[in-house]
Length: 138
Image (tube, rainbow, N blue to C red; front, side, top):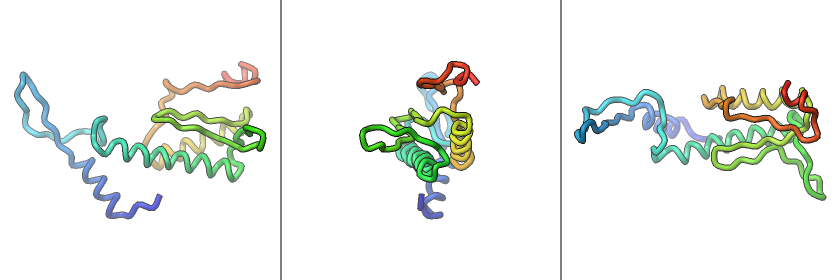
């Protein structure tokens, strides 16, 4: 997305060198390093979340434009859409065939590898419109 090495290094240092203190019986403990990256409530969270969300959107749009993923046509002009994002939700619209689903999975896997973020399969649902339930369950 065009962020320079120096900027990426600053963000990495902000995240990886963070220390916190907690209150126990109303008294703060000594500072200690946090274990895993960015935390909810961190001032950087919304900005980094938007950057990663945009990166995923770019991947999906590019895959659709290059006919790797077959989006769906909407409206009178037949405009193709492949996805909608809102906050931390993603809806993918695609032609209901096995090859298309495999391509979507490849794009999502590429995003996981590049970003370190993973799809939560417990919160993921696949719906089919005008598709046999058997196909959706496969």
